[in-house]
Length: 335
Image (cartoon, rainbow, N blue to C red):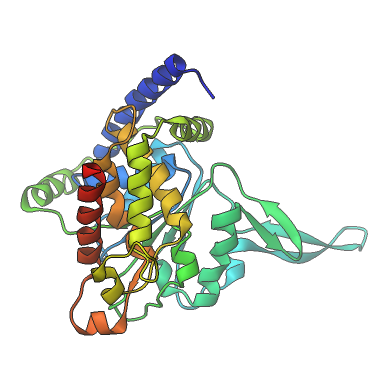
């Protein structure tokens, strides 16, 4: 643990470096500030991100740009219905040497990288989706009984199409919980789309430059974990997560009536890390209650589900989260 003066200097230096990284990303990604910040927050927190949006909104370009700016070795997997687990993890092949001896040799799959882009992850079967579970949580894979560690740092940035589209499979709850945040990628506004048109249809295209590397990102993750978090923010995180559990004593009426199941302790851990990362990206030395409110949807939205009755009545999960967040924040700050 660094002493306070050293920690402040480290945070300020990292903040300046992150500002440069955001500028570099901005040469390729026009607009989408919140999407970029959430993606960076996930990586600074050592976690994975799920980008949710329609095709053609720049999700793949964002991940490619992040790999360049963060200086990470990257692979991309296009998930399709016929994709098999071995296509992700790798497989052992039987080889015959010059002396006639036979032996197995492991050929690494694309998961052996620092930044894995899982494109359209919900177009693969649940069996193939589950191949990522161990890798995302334990940063290793098991092949033929052997544990094979993945490179460090290791991050998965997955894109997902809306489940209303044809040919998609819903992600299992256990895998959704492995994603630190779910990032909604929406259509750009008119001015942003105008800028995209002018920047991408000419003879030259902008290029992002490298700012970080793997070692620098690991060091940054260590700084994030050392950032102080005030007692008020800690209590707000606990209040918010516990209020979203329909069978808990602290759940308000809207949660009891509408929510089928709520977030577990991993959600509180995710909030604790991402509020620090958001403060750092904003040039602040410690997170605030506003950070908790801003990250409620990205952190909690994929760790909760509405009941069938609530969906039938037209309830929207995001509105439930907003209502609970507003209530918890108001009560917590007044206490």
